[in-house]
Image (cartoon, rainbow, N blue to C red; front, side, top):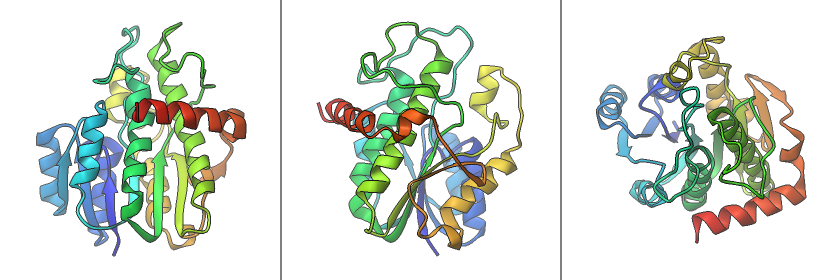
Length: 257
Protein backbone atom coordinates (compact mmCIF):
# COMPACT_ATOMS: atom_id res chain seq x y z
CA UNK A 1 0.00 0.00 0.00
CA UNK A 2 1.11 3.56 -0.70
CA UNK A 3 2.24 6.20 1.77
CA UNK A 4 0.41 9.40 0.87
CA UNK A 5 0.65 12.99 2.09
CA UNK A 6 -2.55 15.02 1.71
CA UNK A 7 -2.56 18.75 2.39
CA UNK A 8 -5.81 20.33 3.50
CA UNK A 9 -7.02 17.00 4.89
CA UNK A 10 -9.00 18.41 7.81
CA UNK A 11 -12.04 19.46 5.77
CA UNK A 12 -13.89 19.05 2.49
CA UNK A 13 -12.35 17.04 -0.34
CA UNK A 14 -9.11 16.44 1.55
CA UNK A 15 -10.91 14.88 4.49
CA UNK A 16 -13.06 12.70 2.23
CA UNK A 17 -9.93 11.63 0.36
CA UNK A 18 -8.19 10.72 3.62
CA UNK A 19 -11.13 8.59 4.77
CA UNK A 20 -11.36 6.78 1.44
CA UNK A 21 -7.63 6.08 1.20
CA UNK A 22 -7.41 4.88 4.80
CA UNK A 23 -10.33 2.53 4.15
CA UNK A 24 -8.31 1.17 1.22
CA UNK A 25 -5.40 0.34 3.52
CA UNK A 26 -3.07 3.16 2.53
CA UNK A 27 -0.77 4.85 5.05
CA UNK A 28 -1.38 8.56 5.40
CA UNK A 29 0.29 11.75 6.48
CA UNK A 30 -2.41 14.40 6.83
CA UNK A 31 -1.96 18.15 6.98
CA UNK A 32 -4.40 20.79 8.13
CA UNK A 33 -4.52 24.22 9.72
CA UNK A 34 -7.26 23.57 12.28
CA UNK A 35 -5.76 21.42 15.05
CA UNK A 36 -9.07 20.05 16.31
CA UNK A 37 -10.42 18.92 12.94
CA UNK A 38 -7.01 17.56 11.97
CA UNK A 39 -6.88 15.46 15.16
CA UNK A 40 -10.29 13.98 14.35
CA UNK A 41 -9.13 12.93 10.88
CA UNK A 42 -5.91 11.46 12.25
CA UNK A 43 -7.76 9.49 14.91
CA UNK A 44 -10.24 8.05 12.43
CA UNK A 45 -7.61 7.16 9.80
CA UNK A 46 -4.61 6.26 11.96
CA UNK A 47 -2.64 8.89 10.04
CA UNK A 48 0.34 10.94 11.08
CA UNK A 49 -0.85 14.52 11.49
CA UNK A 50 1.13 17.70 10.86
CA UNK A 51 -0.48 21.08 11.54
CA UNK A 52 0.79 24.02 9.51
CA UNK A 53 -0.47 27.32 8.12
CA UNK A 54 0.41 27.36 4.43
CA UNK A 55 0.05 31.13 4.36
CA UNK A 56 3.57 31.13 5.82
CA UNK A 57 6.49 29.86 3.75
CA UNK A 58 8.36 29.13 6.99
CA UNK A 59 5.48 26.84 7.99
CA UNK A 60 5.63 25.16 4.59
CA UNK A 61 9.31 24.46 5.20
CA UNK A 62 8.52 23.13 8.67
CA UNK A 63 5.83 20.86 7.23
CA UNK A 64 8.28 19.40 4.72
CA UNK A 65 10.92 18.89 7.41
CA UNK A 66 8.37 17.13 9.64
CA UNK A 67 7.67 14.39 7.09
CA UNK A 68 9.64 11.33 8.17
CA UNK A 69 10.52 8.67 5.62
CA UNK A 70 9.60 8.33 1.97
CA UNK A 71 6.34 9.06 0.19
CA UNK A 72 4.63 7.42 -2.77
CA UNK A 73 2.11 10.19 -3.44
CA UNK A 74 1.89 13.90 -2.68
CA UNK A 75 -1.58 15.45 -2.99
CA UNK A 76 -1.49 19.25 -2.96
CA UNK A 77 -5.11 19.87 -2.05
CA UNK A 78 -5.09 22.72 0.48
CA UNK A 79 -6.35 26.04 -0.79
CA UNK A 80 -8.13 29.31 -0.17
CA UNK A 81 -11.35 29.90 -2.10
CA UNK A 82 -12.99 33.02 -3.51
CA UNK A 83 -13.70 34.44 -0.06
CA UNK A 84 -16.76 36.46 0.89
CA UNK A 85 -18.17 38.63 -1.91
CA UNK A 86 -16.57 42.07 -1.75
CA UNK A 87 -13.93 41.07 0.79
CA UNK A 88 -10.76 43.17 0.66
CA UNK A 89 -7.41 41.96 -0.62
CA UNK A 90 -5.58 39.83 1.95
CA UNK A 91 -1.87 39.20 2.43
CA UNK A 92 0.02 36.16 3.64
CA UNK A 93 2.45 36.13 6.55
CA UNK A 94 5.20 36.90 4.02
CA UNK A 95 3.33 39.86 2.55
CA UNK A 96 2.17 38.09 -0.62
CA UNK A 97 -1.38 38.10 -1.99
CA UNK A 98 -3.06 35.37 0.05
CA UNK A 99 -4.53 33.19 -2.70
CA UNK A 100 -1.29 33.25 -4.67
CA UNK A 101 0.59 32.30 -1.49
CA UNK A 102 -1.60 29.39 -0.37
CA UNK A 103 -2.88 28.03 -3.68
CA UNK A 104 0.36 28.27 -5.63
CA UNK A 105 3.51 29.26 -3.75
CA UNK A 106 2.91 26.81 -0.91
CA UNK A 107 2.40 23.69 -3.10
CA UNK A 108 5.28 24.78 -5.35
CA UNK A 109 7.67 25.04 -2.41
CA UNK A 110 6.37 21.94 -0.60
CA UNK A 111 6.75 19.85 -3.72
CA UNK A 112 10.29 21.09 -4.31
CA UNK A 113 11.27 20.28 -0.74
CA UNK A 114 9.70 16.80 -0.82
CA UNK A 115 10.99 15.66 -4.21
CA UNK A 116 13.90 13.76 -2.59
CA UNK A 117 11.34 11.86 -0.46
CA UNK A 118 9.30 10.58 -3.39
CA UNK A 119 10.23 6.98 -4.09
CA UNK A 120 9.77 5.88 -7.66
CA UNK A 121 7.30 5.30 -9.11
CA UNK A 122 5.60 8.23 -7.39
CA UNK A 123 2.76 10.61 -8.10
CA UNK A 124 2.20 14.31 -7.53
CA UNK A 125 -1.43 15.37 -7.78
CA UNK A 126 -2.27 19.09 -7.79
CA UNK A 127 -5.88 20.02 -7.10
CA UNK A 128 -6.61 22.97 -9.40
CA UNK A 129 -9.80 24.33 -10.95
CA UNK A 130 -11.62 24.71 -14.23
CA UNK A 131 -11.99 28.36 -13.21
CA UNK A 132 -8.77 29.89 -14.57
CA UNK A 133 -7.69 33.38 -15.58
CA UNK A 134 -4.50 34.57 -17.28
CA UNK A 135 -1.74 35.34 -14.80
CA UNK A 136 -0.31 38.87 -15.02
CA UNK A 137 3.43 38.60 -14.40
CA UNK A 138 3.63 42.39 -14.13
CA UNK A 139 1.13 42.41 -11.25
CA UNK A 140 1.54 39.05 -9.51
CA UNK A 141 0.16 40.34 -6.20
CA UNK A 142 -2.95 41.72 -7.90
CA UNK A 143 -2.51 45.20 -6.52
CA UNK A 144 -4.71 46.54 -9.32
CA UNK A 145 -8.35 45.58 -9.79
CA UNK A 146 -8.41 42.99 -7.02
CA UNK A 147 -11.26 40.61 -6.34
CA UNK A 148 -11.13 37.25 -4.63
CA UNK A 149 -12.60 35.22 -7.47
CA UNK A 150 -10.06 36.51 -9.97
CA UNK A 151 -7.21 36.02 -7.50
CA UNK A 152 -8.29 32.40 -6.96
CA UNK A 153 -8.53 31.69 -10.67
CA UNK A 154 -5.14 33.24 -11.42
CA UNK A 155 -3.53 31.15 -8.67
CA UNK A 156 -5.00 27.95 -10.11
CA UNK A 157 -3.73 28.81 -13.59
CA UNK A 158 -0.26 29.23 -12.09
CA UNK A 159 -0.54 25.84 -10.37
CA UNK A 160 -1.54 24.09 -13.60
CA UNK A 161 1.29 25.77 -15.54
CA UNK A 162 3.74 24.66 -12.84
CA UNK A 163 2.36 21.11 -13.05
CA UNK A 164 3.12 20.99 -16.77
CA UNK A 165 6.56 22.46 -16.18
CA UNK A 166 7.44 20.01 -13.42
CA UNK A 167 6.14 17.04 -15.43
CA UNK A 168 8.56 17.94 -18.22
CA UNK A 169 11.41 18.37 -15.74
CA UNK A 170 10.75 14.97 -14.15
CA UNK A 171 10.09 13.05 -17.37
CA UNK A 172 11.76 9.65 -17.25
CA UNK A 173 12.34 9.71 -13.47
CA UNK A 174 9.29 7.65 -12.54
CA UNK A 175 7.62 10.62 -10.82
CA UNK A 176 4.41 11.75 -12.52
CA UNK A 177 2.73 15.14 -12.15
CA UNK A 178 -0.90 15.81 -12.99
CA UNK A 179 -3.47 18.45 -12.09
CA UNK A 180 -7.24 18.31 -12.00
CA UNK A 181 -10.47 20.14 -11.47
CA UNK A 182 -12.15 17.54 -9.24
CA UNK A 183 -15.73 18.85 -9.51
CA UNK A 184 -17.60 22.14 -9.62
CA UNK A 185 -18.71 23.93 -6.44
CA UNK A 186 -18.84 20.94 -4.13
CA UNK A 187 -20.43 21.36 -0.67
CA UNK A 188 -17.23 22.50 1.07
CA UNK A 189 -16.44 25.27 3.53
CA UNK A 190 -14.83 27.48 0.89
CA UNK A 191 -17.85 27.17 -1.40
CA UNK A 192 -20.29 27.95 1.40
CA UNK A 193 -18.20 30.99 2.37
CA UNK A 194 -18.32 32.32 -1.19
CA UNK A 195 -22.11 31.92 -1.30
CA UNK A 196 -22.04 30.60 -4.86
CA UNK A 197 -24.31 27.60 -4.36
CA UNK A 198 -23.58 23.93 -5.03
CA UNK A 199 -23.37 22.18 -8.42
CA UNK A 200 -21.58 18.85 -7.97
CA UNK A 201 -21.35 16.40 -5.08
CA UNK A 202 -18.31 15.75 -2.95
CA UNK A 203 -18.42 12.15 -4.16
CA UNK A 204 -17.84 13.29 -7.75
CA UNK A 205 -14.72 15.20 -6.74
CA UNK A 206 -13.53 12.30 -4.63
CA UNK A 207 -13.87 9.83 -7.50
CA UNK A 208 -11.85 12.02 -9.86
CA UNK A 209 -9.10 12.68 -7.34
CA UNK A 210 -8.82 9.06 -6.18
CA UNK A 211 -8.28 8.03 -9.78
CA UNK A 212 -5.17 10.18 -10.10
CA UNK A 213 -3.89 9.14 -6.68
CA UNK A 214 -4.17 5.35 -6.84
CA UNK A 215 -5.66 4.01 -10.10
CA UNK A 216 -3.19 1.54 -11.72
CA UNK A 217 -3.90 2.88 -15.21
CA UNK A 218 -2.56 6.30 -14.13
CA UNK A 219 0.87 5.01 -13.05
CA UNK A 220 2.76 6.39 -16.05
CA UNK A 221 0.40 9.21 -17.09
CA UNK A 222 2.02 12.61 -16.56
CA UNK A 223 1.78 16.22 -17.63
CA UNK A 224 -1.99 16.15 -18.03
CA UNK A 225 -4.88 18.28 -16.82
CA UNK A 226 -8.20 16.62 -16.01
CA UNK A 227 -11.71 17.96 -15.63
CA UNK A 228 -13.21 15.34 -13.37
CA UNK A 229 -12.26 11.95 -14.80
CA UNK A 230 -11.80 13.28 -18.34
CA UNK A 231 -8.57 14.63 -19.74
CA UNK A 232 -9.15 18.23 -20.73
CA UNK A 233 -7.36 21.37 -21.84
CA UNK A 234 -6.42 24.18 -19.49
CA UNK A 235 -6.24 27.85 -20.42
CA UNK A 236 -3.79 28.42 -23.30
CA UNK A 237 -1.34 30.40 -21.16
CA UNK A 238 -0.51 27.26 -19.14
CA UNK A 239 1.05 25.67 -22.26
CA UNK A 240 3.19 28.70 -23.15
CA UNK A 241 6.83 27.73 -22.53
CA UNK A 242 7.99 31.36 -22.35
CA UNK A 243 5.32 32.22 -19.80
CA UNK A 244 6.17 29.16 -17.72
CA UNK A 245 9.86 30.06 -17.68
CA UNK A 246 9.10 33.60 -16.54
CA UNK A 247 6.63 32.29 -13.95
CA UNK A 248 9.28 29.89 -12.65
CA UNK A 249 11.80 32.70 -12.27
CA UNK A 250 9.25 34.87 -10.46
CA UNK A 251 8.25 32.00 -8.19
CA UNK A 252 11.82 31.20 -7.21
CA UNK A 253 12.41 34.86 -6.35
CA UNK A 254 9.37 34.78 -4.06
CA UNK A 255 9.94 31.47 -2.27
CA UNK A 256 13.71 31.91 -2.01
CA UNK A 257 14.16 35.69 -1.65
